[in-house]
Length: 434
Image (cartoon, rainbow, N blue to C red; front, side, top):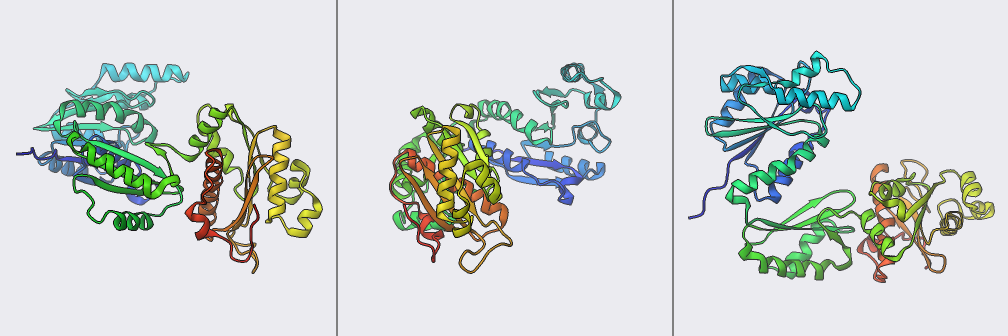
């Protein structure tokens, strides 16, 4: 008989989460990291900074759960109540923890700060608590047991939580058998929607194997498809399902794991010893930003140009004034001249150029809001396309920047097939040339 899964619960604290001032991304991150190790989250509760409510909820959780992850409330201010709450429920006192003090002293010394009483509050932990290392923040994590339930307390700062989760999950995986056989394949895609992908899969595989859990995580700009199995014995079924997805979605699959478009483009450029430049108008430098988020990007990306006004398009990229006057900034000829100008001034091998109408104003009957011209390629083979992406301004910029990177990825891989979103977003009244 298979053991029952562990009852793992999350307790998130903070008035800022309850009020909506802070978006709760931490519980999603915890669930994702735990899920990858085969450790599902049974229940999640969010409570404001109220000692009585926190005590009641923590005691109730501890009576039912095998493991509680408490997130938030470890800081130096009066509304950081996690240590106080846990001590009260455990029936112990708060004591200054020498290891927490040493951590604070080192944290302050690295920043040339004076260790004050407010910071020292973070060293007052429940008697018997064990330190959980926080390598970047001032507040240590800590853990203890409440009856048969293990409680691990983590900071609410997302970057601190992220770096602490890997060792926590690894340690749990070593001691909890439910996580040992779990395996998840994560495929990153661009240009597919959830409903489209699900329908294609349902049509192709109406009898999808029950031992392979299929999951989707839609986002902007990418969508993740997950294939999860609970046992190594199901590896062959998982492999067959992966082959099916690769056959169905083909060149819409960017890569595996946490791969993002910019990372894949830079990898392909490095393989060729080539450099990329960008010429951006409506995206305001977002493509360059996506590229430079990737460590080591300077090897393949050394210059990008944000030319928002017509005057700057002329003076910086050499776009012809007559071209602008005759065709408008959102036109094939202008985006081609932007790309060639960026190539000439940067000395790069490849370019991405964009010019469009992000909205909410500025559209016309012939060029409605969301119209954009995109160019990509090299000096000898520069391709262009006019698309219409009628969404809000931020999403327009995000999806267009990703489309530019995706077309460069396809160019470097010598993929001739057009992506599905070209047909979906094709401008009806403006015929592109290539």
